[in-house]
Amino acid sequence: MATSTLHLIIRKTRQDLMKGKQNLLITITVLLFCMLSIGIGFTKYKATNSQIAKYRKEVREQWEHRPAKHPHRMAHYGYLVFRMGHPLSIFDNGLDDYLGNVIFLEAHKQNSANLSEAGSSGILVRFGAFSSAFMLQCLVPLIILFLGFGLIAREREDAILKILSTQGASGRQIIWGKVLGLWQFSLLFLLPVLPVVFVAVVLSEAAPWTDIVFRMLAILPAYMVYYFFVSSLAVLVSAYSTTASSALVSLIGSWLILVIFLPKGIQFAAQNFYPTPSRIAFETLLEKDILKAGDSHNPDDPHFKKIKDSLLGHYKVETTSELPFNYSGFVMKEGEKISSRIYIRHQKELEEKYYNQQRFSDISAFIDPMIAVKNFSMTASGTDYFSYTEFQEQAEDYRYKMAQKLNDLQIEKISNVKPEKGGPPAIIEGDNWKKFPDFNYQYTSFSKSIREQWMPAAALLFWLMVCVLMIETAGRNLKLI
Image 1: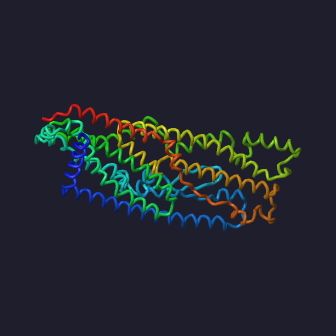
Image 2: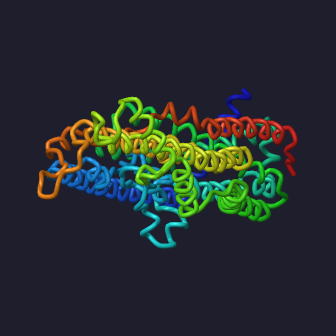
Image 3: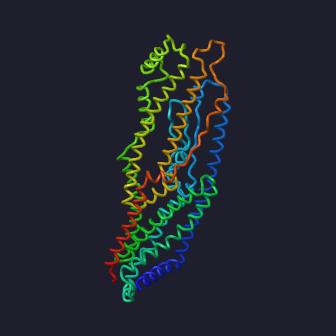
């Protein structure tokens, strides 16, 4: 009988919400905007991928058709690599608009990614991108709060709660019934969106559909838990408020704090607690450390002078021109090892600061569930900072191998004796460039991302347990009049 009463309250709450014409109009409007954002995201994603494919082809063709050159000149000629956004950026573009998409690779120097969307979109991009994830995270909760502010307070004012009590409904059943009824209605904003996202992502043909299914099966319960929290907040505030109007004011204030003020404040605090150097400061410090360790372009550098003396002694010759291999190529290879090692150390230190900022944000998800669902959604969509750092690491690995291969070609194929004036130049055939494999960016797997960033998922489970506890407490202490 108790279960039957609970089901009746859930069904009655859900039906009352669905009967309201304005409620259905709002639902349809939000869904239309979500579909529009998915369509825009799909079109933008396809156009971007088409451009990247075009530029990749141009870069590759220009590289392969370079004429015969000295290998070190080719190392400084450089190579452009591109980051392909994850297809689920159609749903949640996360940090993609703020991070670079192109890196210029060259010998002895590690460049950062450039050409971000934010860099060419003006100040408006700071207010958030028009995506279905943004609407589901920020707009829909406000609608849920508007729908739920009077579910308890107004019925208390109209003496309906007293009538429900006399008919055998307990306070616990009333609270649970209102929460679950509102939560079920809130899923109307979510459930129609994800199948459309899935179809759009599959049509993009950028990732296996099995990987997409796996990621979306993680996204769905995350948003369901988030909406359960919002529904619980609406009903609980309504239950503890004396009037429906005071409940509405409290809920609007809660939305402003949870969705606007706290996320911005936490972001500001993270940047101040763990400050990062500017790009110029980072590159200046990096250059200083490389020069201290050894400058491969300076013939009088102490480090490379020791190497030179050691080689001359080992091969028992007087000059480097008598060595059985190209000495300059050997020096360049050693210099690449030094600069790469120093860069990786500096980059790890910088990434540690960004990691601390991200960890600060993840910990704050236990204070604000909106941050929890936002960070988890980015991770599941492959648009988080960890996925970006994976691109940087893949690009640096490719750059280092390319530079060292060119150095090996110089060591093996370039004469150690400088060409005379009017003699044949120190070059190798252009066919050698075609043997270099193209850069092929691999998306970060969801399992790897979630292992590195598990805290948002834990925070969502934490908020689920908090909601259950609060509902049970409120149900026992519900005032009927």
